[in-house]
Length: 314
Image (cartoon, rainbow, N blue to C red; front, top):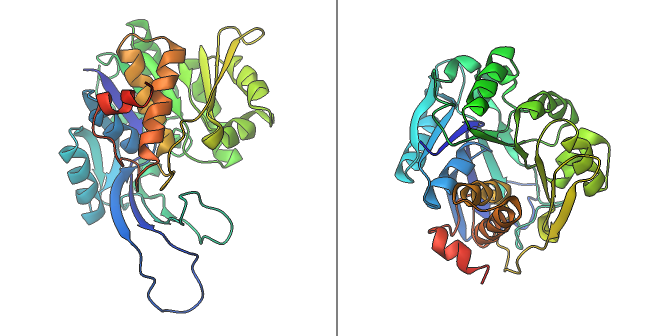
């Protein structure tokens, strides 16, 4: 088994381009509407599978039509979904995202509508015995919104898996300081942490991404990769008092939608590690995967395979 993705599973419904939502009930005609597997576990799982990895995804979804659609999308993309538990008392987490022309949301673009749903019910009991230790990689996607995993029993599972050689990566989902404070408890059990710039600042109080990365390294990970949107990413690895720090530029592409670029970056990064690349080269693979996804609508856009992604680096 290559990768287990564990955490937030969300069904995204996206529309583009949406020129702002004015008052009134008239129809807004758009070019495209899509439903995709999203969330820092489900979105990353699909991206990993499209990059050629064997993936098992673990999480909690509702016993509802939204859950059925999410399972169908993930299965069609080659993800093993037997680790998903169905909840009768909670709906599948879902979001509705109006995407403006140019792909990057700002003031006036209308709200993202989000129902947290069953993600809030995920606990360590959903993780099968021995599952983490059988994986080469475990990706914790959104532990800030799956607070039921903030449990000594789950941390013991991670510790046991790492002792047998499993590599643990982690990517938060929200930008809410209270939720991210809970995610900090996972850092001693993580090898590679991949927050975005806003999340790193919220967790450390440092607006400078290099200072934030140093602070996060001191909490346990061997590597911190801070993604910076259109400014690329910062890779810090080694001891917190004297890490090696590199900045990687973003690749120049025509941006359609930035939704899911962080998930794609994580998938590319993990894929690089799985192919024996070092941390910096793996971050370049992540950069290329994110740039690929940015060229279409949704978290899986334009990902047709690893070879096409790597051609972007030539």
